[in-house]
Image (cartoon, rainbow, N blue to C red; front, side, top):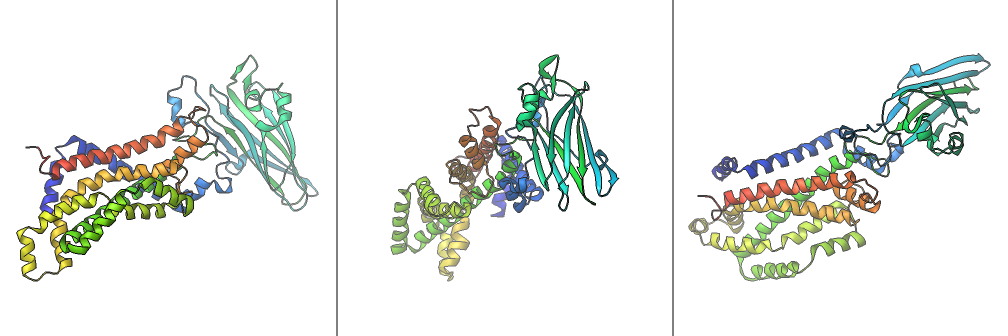
Length: 447
C-alpha cells in the first residue's frame, strides 16, 4: 500500500494538471488556516452579524481599494481621525467653576479625484448630569468656514453630516459630502488640499470630557469591498474557505468510506444482507437530494451540520455502492481471501484488512472529484436562502448579492469574488482528481 502511494506521488509530477490542482488546493488550505488563525470563530460571527456597530466606520457598498490601480481618476479611501488615537487633536482649558472647553481639531489632506460617499462625526461624552455642548465648523483648503451644527452631546452621539438638511440648505441644496469638498471654480470636482473639522466643546462638570471621531467614508474600501451593511466582504471570503472545504471534504470522505464499507459487507455476507442493502440503495437512488435538503431547511433546521449529516446519510446508499459492490465481487474471489479464510480470519478482519485496502487506490480519485460537488451543493443551499444563518460563506454572499440587486446596481465585485473562489475550488479538485484517476486506474494509465 505504501509503495502504491509513493509511486502515485512520483507519477503526479508527470501531469501538469495534477501539479496545478495541488497548488490551487494548497492555496485554499492556506486561506482556510489563515482565516481560522487571524479571525477566530467567535470573532468571525461577531463581525458578520455586525454586533456593537463594529462596521460603523466602513462605507456602504464600497468597491475594493485596489480598483484605484485601474482608475484614471483616483477614488477616495476612507479617512478616520479620532481624539482617542491622537490625543494632541484634543485641547482642554479649565475656565473655573467646573466649566471647561473641550475643543478638537481634525486636519487631513484630501488628494482624490472623486467625492466621498458619506461624512459622519461620532461623539462620546463623560458627564454626570449636565450634558456637554459642541459646535462643529468645517474649514476648506481655500479658507472658507462652513458651520455644520451645534449639538448637546449624550454619552454616545452620532452626527451624520450627510443627512443634515440644514447643512444641505447652507450649501445651496447640494449634498454635504459633495458641497463641503467641491471646488468653487468647478463644482463637479473636489478641491484638493488640507481640510479641517473644528469642534468647540464646552463641559459643565468636573471631570467631564468629550471625545470625537471623524469618518470621511470613501468609495473604495478593503481588499474585497463592503456590502449593504458596511461589512467587509473579506471576512466572508476568508471564512467561507474553511466552511466550504470542511463541508466538501467531510461529505466526500464520510459518504465514500461508508459506501465502500457497505459494499464490502453486502458482497461478503450476501444473502439477506446483500438484498437489504440493495433495496435501500434502489430507494435512495430515486430520491432527489436537493428537494430533500430544501425540506429539511424549511421544516427542521438550516444548520450546516444538520445539512451535512443528511448529505452523508443519503450519499452512503447512493449509486457508488453498485460500483464498489462489483469491485468487491472480484476481490472476494481472490486467492489471498481464501487463504485468510483458511487460517481462521473473522469476517470483520477480512473486510477491513484484506478487502477494503485492495480498492482504496480506486477510492481516492473518486473522493477527490466528489469534493467540488458538495462544495457547490452548500453554496446552492445558501443561494436559495437555506444556508446556515450564522456562518459567513460564499453562498451567503451570493444570496445577499442577489437579494439586494448587486449586479443591477453595479456592485459586480460582490458576485464575482465568491463565484471565482467557487470555480477555483471546483477546478483545483477536478484537475487533481482526473489526474489521480489516470494514475490509479490501469485502463486509463498512459503506456
